[in-house]
Image (cartoon, rainbow, N blue to C red; front, side):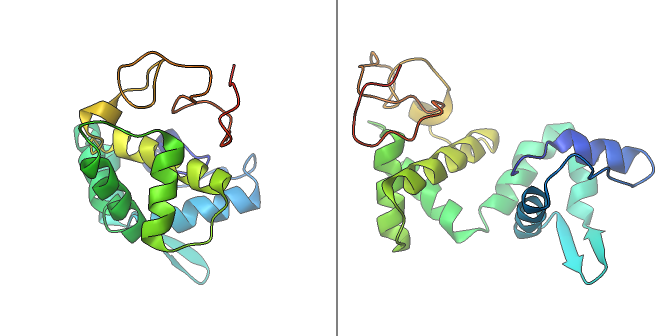
Length: 171
């Protein structure tokens, strides 16, 4: 969730119900709340934010967090398509650039290569946390983003900070 950890929500819900927003930029907070609403963890109304029952379950049952997150995330059409792409390529894997390009085509959106790759990276993290990433994609590893092969100087790993799309060496 865009810059916020579940610890913020857990602390808030287990204490007095107030969240300290002081160290969070307004744009980050707005994106996070929007995503929480998409995941059906909160409902925003004029003047207040309603915490949904699902959020209390998330806080109270750490063992259910992956399931609850997956349930909400799969309601987001772009993420559902992303998971379908992973399933389609579960035998050979793809790198983030390839996944991002396929996602861009399937969603019929006008993203730059770097945007497509960043979105794929974010959704890959979501798929992993939700337990929805097929085994070829399930682990963060040094090496190939395609699976278990050796990393070549022109491949980016899933968690490189780069959005290098022209296959220049990433060190």
